[in-house]
Length: 226
Image 1: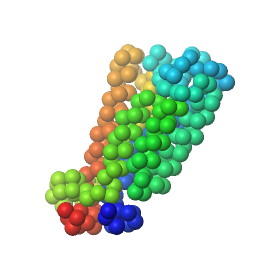
Image 2: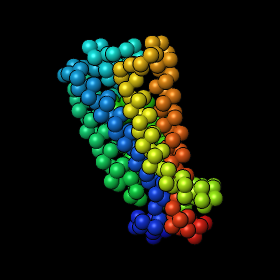
Image 3: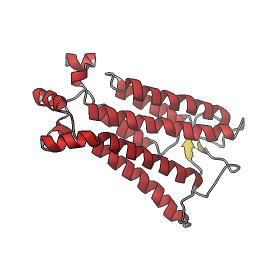
Image 4: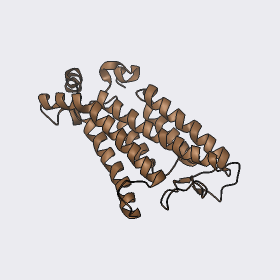
């Protein structure tokens, strides 16, 4: 094993992969908080089975706003509490420890646990993407350091915070539509649902753009390891 990878030294870390993996992990955790809070609102009542609607009839705001989930815990209150706890754990791990040698495996394990305690089904796309990117944190970043000339690499590096910020804005828009179904000037339910999914796909596209580009020091590290 590369000693730099084992020690998690700064020179061996792909900053772009770390930033994107952490961001995707935060999105997974937010899904847990979102679903968990609505499950808690359904109170100390039994679930109808492993497949549940996190948003119950009393709080449903539109026909597509059920926030479907899976849970092995046969109680809405308890599954909601667990979803919030695991969701917060995913967020903390993603922000503080995703670049550890076992960071990607722990993220995947926590995300699968979140799936089974009511954290939502749709977040699986973010979980798998975050896991795959996190696996690249301690590997030579040849894909996104050699794909473009140095000047463009530098421009993409400077643009990365903007890509990530815009991705989170799209995520917030998608969550808002998914929960409330409210889109000013748009009354068709299918169109609102399409806008919700379109926002999520565009968000993943921005995270992909954020992978490209790297500082000069990272390009030298990648070149040396090739």
